[in-house]
Length: 255
Image 1 (cartoon, one colour):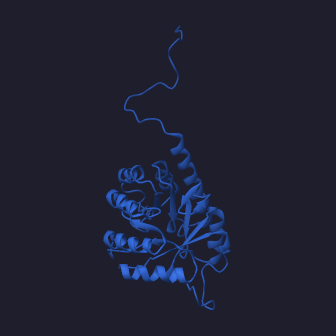
Image 2 (cartoon, one colour):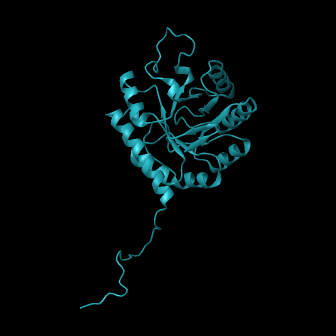
Image 3 (tube, helix red, strand yellow):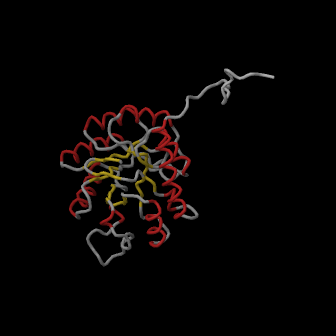
């Protein structure tokens, strides 16, 4: 069970929407993923005009936690305005704070992110900031009162996997709120590794929506995340630099 604020989730896979080739593929991928949470960019959704296209029109949203994000924001003011739009539309009071600080790398702005989280927490939002793999920032945000931290594995859409597993492990060990790895996951191997390092969940979009077969990839990611979590809970054997026989030699007679 993954708990974020008041939400109790059975699945540790959070699925992004909006990048699928068509609505049918998206619906099938959502079903295959068995996710409880669908995240979307507020700027890309028509929250008020029901006559305009809606990429989630074929999805029964009552079965999911809808998790809006502030993608596209570059300032605190923009992120706050997007959050208020989502709140007024009755989507959800849990918001993913995403504020881009560099146009080339699309890395998040740590200063604007911190300030935005502070204001949204004061307003009563359930706040989940998207951040770089920054241990100190993650700890400061936890102290501020955020409900989860969402460090990237690598820059958005690169599919490079976990660039800095050591820093991710530091974050897992030093904060007491859920750690949701967001951005850069490319394959189930990457998702499994993140979970083995102790992440509480994974937010995916491009890795599934841009796969050759998004539906199969959604299922593969689901299984990879489950396997990684089980491995983390089981506790792997220590890494050694000398061989150790798998069968005991004590008490064995030799001819």
